[in-house]
Each structure stands twice: as structure tokens, then as C-alpha cells.
Figure 1 (cartoon, rainbow over the protein chains, first blue to last red):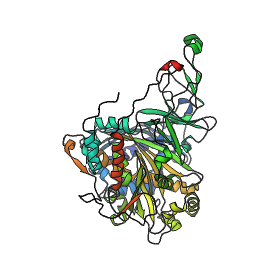
Figure 2: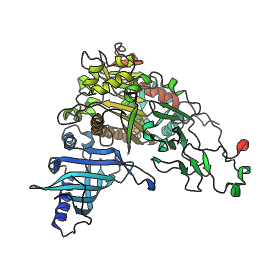
Figure 3: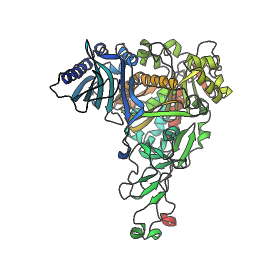
Figure 4: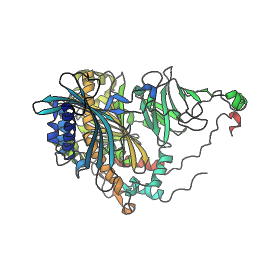
Length: 176
Length: 462
């Protein structure tokens, strides 16, 4: 899989952009309604799902993400384990469940290698737990590699650029 | 003049020494202030590992309490720990958290320091100050951390110039520290840290890693259920030994009967090549800890707020078991808020394939997204929230597990344990009481008054 992409984003009228944007909206719906099995079904078996740690660096150093440390660096096995854990009776961190909403916007779609699509998006995750602690927000950019299949688009790779160096949420018992 | 002794501190420390914890200690402004001045002002605090500043001119910025420190490797390779405040007007000199630099220039008036801390540039020194007649620039430097020590590549500092000698203070804890950060003669590689803030008091994480094997079967039932890590089954967890030695303590898992050093390490997933390195790096006495009856270190805390964890989950669908080590710091931000720093740690000369699997094991279990850590933090936030109210002011929580009402241990010390210190097999809060006795020692003693230092004034500063 290459990172080749078209120079300009596809126009909004392009059917491939519409497919990618709808994929992201439907995916967010699955996460917001805790339909994790269906969400896993959107993954290509070779999925790479990564969220590197961001750091505060001087401007001249231009590297603000740490490629040797991630918040997530997942394959299908570990994503499945995370989902299985939520389905046990003992995942206390999500019992009672958080009220969450993925706000997905700024979708830009590019032609990738072959028939792949590259979709960039912004996501704002609102998460409210219980009635004592303040809700938390996570803001991130995402770059996804989507591949068309007979069943629709599948997620082959997701690189998440989180907009904080110090997360202000108690844990990442969520997916972005 | 020393501040007046805070109301109730003798009652608090008295209760704590009996194994009774006033519930409000987990969220109280006055206690937090005592911890800031008396405890963190005097303790040995972990800042960084040498591998994080591997090359000359590398630096990281880390905190002790509210104080920002620059941890640098200078152009000659020497390590320095310096207070990150310009000695002119007090601005934070370096505002990035890591990077590479030969000099640091304060953005305010361009005072410039070399990466060994020496003041190298002072604009208009002659015009503005009349040169050395007005401000003695010669020999000035950023304020150094009062005490610094390095062990296994781990850089510690104390704000106390009269801090106890580090190695003497560390004592028998050093024996156990090597299992986490002394696995190879080539040293360790620290990656990260992941940083995140939780609305929990810092003490809870420190105590938990110190010796709470009792929470594992229930809090972490989900990770057993999904067959990520099989050890925390209740009957297995209680076979482990809890030890404390010097200023720290920890938990272990019992290895299968007949274990010896090599088979014990192989059981938790270390490849031959790693076992060879560990056999060379550890002493015969350390290796004997893993021999029959055989115990493998798991969680541990070095007082006050540095913890370690060593577990061995299943890291792929084919059933590969791989151990990992994480080092974590519970940095207090306020009475009810902690910043967690969590590093992944691996032998620097481990094979790439092992490093990758061990890193995967870490990310699945601990850190910001870790499946163990998710449930821990949920509990700790809840405790901290509950501790804020009025009822908690009159509640003494029970920290006496393993003692009769008369204060005698319910079982004898475990004599078959190969390590130094005090060891009990089974569940108990011996280690948490040990941690709290060290806590009480520090918060009950007023911090000595120190003379303020003036810069650029030479002999006239007093």
C-alpha cells in the first residue's frame, strides 16, 4: 500500500468523495451507538490503526509527533480484544457507559494508489461520564486509506493526529 | 521562621501509622500543600531516562511538582538538571518539551544559556549594567537541581540540597529495580512518555502499584475474560508474594512448580537471547528470586510516585506470550488531579522482533489506552470524587489487611522468598502501610527554611 495520492481533493460532486464521506458518517454512528461488532466489520483484515503521541517542540524542529510512542498502534487482533473487553460484564470504565458523540467534519477525499481512496477528516469526540466529572473533548485529524470491496468501503489504515500533547480525558476507552 | 504546624497533622499521621486512612487525604488542599512542600520538596523524584537524551545536545523538560526542569546532555555528553527559569526576570527558558539544542535563549530579553546551564549571552552587559561592576556575569548559570543521582540510566533529582545519599536511601530496593531497568548490560531504552491527566489523587496510583494484588482479580476481570492475560485469576494472584524493601515495594506472581531462572523467564515469554542477557546482568541472588519456589516481579512502586509494571499478555491471535515493562510517574497537579507519565521500557539491545511484540503488549495493557489502566483510573477518579465531601472528613478507611485487630500479622513472613526485605505470601496491605509510613515521616516534618539566592551580586548577595 503506498501513500500516493492525487494532488487535489476530489470535487464534492464526485461519487467517490460522497462514498468516503458517507462511510465516515456511518462509522461514527456505529461508534456512537456502541455497535462495535459492526464497526469491526468495516476493517480490512490488514488494518493499521495508529495514534502517535504529540509533543511540544520548537517550530524549527517540525516533528511534533513521536513515531516511537503511540496512544494506539493496533492491528485487527488488538482492536478485536478491545471490543471483546467492552462486551464483558467487567469493563468498569464503560459501565455505566459514557455518552459519546463523534462529530466528523472537514472531509477531503483524494485518489490513492490503484482504486484506494485517501480520506482526511476532523473528528471531535464529546464524552460525558456519570454526573460528577466534567465532560471531556478530544480533537483530532485523521487520514484514512479506504479500499473498495463488493460490500462497500473498508478501512485499511487510519493515522490519527491528536491535538493535545497531554490528554485531558481519563483514558482512551473509545475509538476515534 | 517555620510555619505553624497545620491543624490535625499529628492526628492524620497517627491514624495512618495504625493503618487507618482519613478518607479526605485523597482530595484536600491542605494535605496537598504539605505534600508539595514537605514531601516532594525533600524526596528523590524521577525525571527522565538517559536514553531519552541519547545524543549530545538532546534535552527534555520535566517537572517536580510545580517546578519545571531542563534535563540536558551537553555537547560533551554530560547530563545536567537545571531549573528552567531565567535568572534575570523569571521566564521559562525552554518551552518545548524535548529536542536538541546547544543553547537556550530566553524569549523575554535574550539572555542565553549553554546546554550545561552557563550564562553565555547577556545583551548590552556593558551598556546596561556597566559590565561586571553592575552584574557579575562570570560563572553565572541556571539554577541547578539541588541534588541529582543516576541509577540504571534513570535520572533522579531532589529539591533538597541535604537529601539523603541516593544509593543509601535506595537500599535494598535496588535489588528489585534491576528486574525492571537493569535487564541488560547495554542499558534500557525508554519510549514515550504518554501523558494524560486524570481527576484522581496521585497517592492512589502509587499505593496501588506498591502492593494491591487484591484488586487485580476483580478490577481486571475483563482482561482475564478475554484471555489477554491469564495470571490475575484470584487463586493465582493470592499465591504471589508481596515484598517491601527500602523505600519501595511490589507484587509478584508465583511461577509454575519447579521453575528455575531460565524456565521462569521463558514461561513469561522472554526469548533465549534475552534470557542470556538477563542471566549476565543480574546477580546470582537476583536470579534466585525466579528459582523454585519461583516468583516473577509484577507491579512495584518506589516512594513517592514512581511505579513499574511487568506483565506478560498474549500479543497475537496465535497465542504468543510477550512480557513488557512500563515505568510510570504519578505527578500531582492538584489535590484531585494527577498527570500520568507512562513510558514503555525495553532492553536497548533486544531483538527488533521482541521489541515490537513487547511494545504491542504494553499498548494493549497499560498507558492511555491500556486495557488494565482504563479500569484502574475509573476507580481512582471515583475515590477522589468521593473524598471531597463532608462525610469523608470523619471516615477512616481500613488499610490493615493482613493484621489482626491487635496488630499481629495473620500469617508469618514468607521465608522461602529469595529477595531482601519483608515478604508475605497472599493478600495484604503490608506494602501500602509501609508506603504510608514513609508518607507520614515526611509530611509531619516541617521543611527547613532556606536562604534565598540572589544572582549577579557576588559577595554582596546576603
